[in-house]
Length: 493
Ligand code: NAD
Image 1 (cartoon, rainbow, N blue to C red):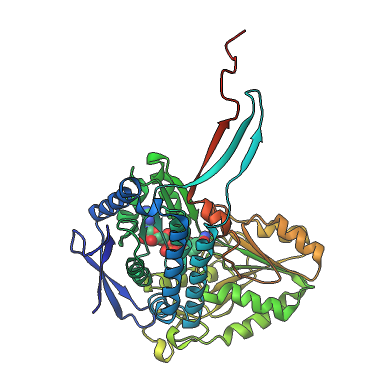
Image 2 (cartoon, helix red, strand yellow):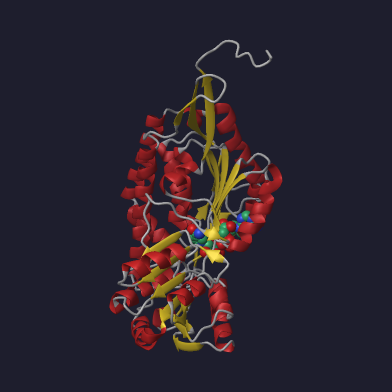
């Protein structure tokens, strides 16, 4: 059995408590690895190391941007060399099909390269001002925030880590990182590469363990300058309360219940396929999943029939053998998804397909759930209101554009949304009315390192990726220079 350690102040360690936890393969319930569990003391040691690295030794913070950029490029190259083994870790650990994991790792490589490039591009602003005090030259510079704590979920173990680590490191921060305890393996390997690449001692620290202790300490600590979190809205709220301790800067990427609005004039086969990608990709364990299909009444029957045919044809199996869908991430999560399905039936939605655990052949011991479609759904149903985070989609219908917009926005979330239509005016009006941060027209889910990612409403605060993703990890300082030194005569009246 492989035993994995945490990484604090440039050393791999088993931590102070000697406790470990098991990482399980959701395809068969077998133990993949045993991981050292960080205590609150370990978490404090990691924070102290990051603090020393940022405020005392300052090696990473003061490194010239060319050298820092080169180091990030080196990390990207090393990840690329190990792309297949990184992908295998996520596939085994999370249950996602191997080819999807390979896509995640390739995206992560580009994310490191993007931020390595971005820190060498011009940024900041220059303002020539003269507002009563003589001529002034005013400009802004970007500086790292300081000690950043970063907490990630289990659905994209590698990619969510990179979306946080790459921009925070590019900006020159020192970091304490905590992956989900369900899926820590690819993050551990990434930190081994950080060490090998020569990141200075204390600039990156890895702690692992329960959110309620380790995560909460990261939120509350007076020595953490910023906390960024990707995960559920309920934990995001508790972290926000913890972060008030020293008015930390905070970034939250939270849950979603995103509308996928389909008009009768849309290309039907295209809409069906994108709807499948929207809800069954990554087993539906996607924050931006198109989990609420809102379809024009006149094409509902035809659409649902076609969607069900294709959902029933989805192959399910061991994710490393590349089926269409692997298992859900854990037994506990599978049970939660199945409980939602039961609730959907009890509340009167029509089960069109799926709706049960899948246990055929090699899947007998794993946590597999069949792709599930519920028709005749109404806005008050639990399955329409709450994030299920599995391969379960609800169908609602509309007759007018206004009705479609009202249904789309009838949610506390605001992460993503899409519209399918061949009418440009309809597409543009509906997309502008959807209160969500990431939207698509005639497609669902494509994401780019260059474009900002984040939610409205209870889906979060701030943006990852793109220029915004770097600026989240930077303070902006305004510097004002008086171009006419000497007395200004303010008190002479
Ligand atoms: P989760 O909220 O249960 O856990 C996320 C992380 O927070 C884990 O590392 C966990 O250990 C930690 N945590 C738990 N309790 C904590 C506490 N009290 N204080 C600090 N940290 C704590 O989420 P999950 O089940 O791992 O992931 C699924 C959720 O993540 C879904 O809601 C999904 O929508 C969301 N998500 C959002 C995005 C986005 O970009 N908006 C991306 C991926 C996932």
